[in-house]
Image (tube, rainbow, N blue to C red; front, side):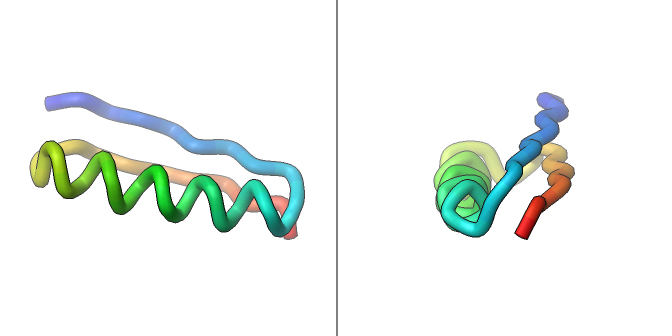
Length: 39
């Protein structure tokens, strides 16, 4: 199982991170995702 942390620093990064997380989850439903936003 892959574990991925996404860290962003502004609102646009939050949006890109969310889209990335959705795409990763679509490819691998078992992936473990965590994130820290900055908006």
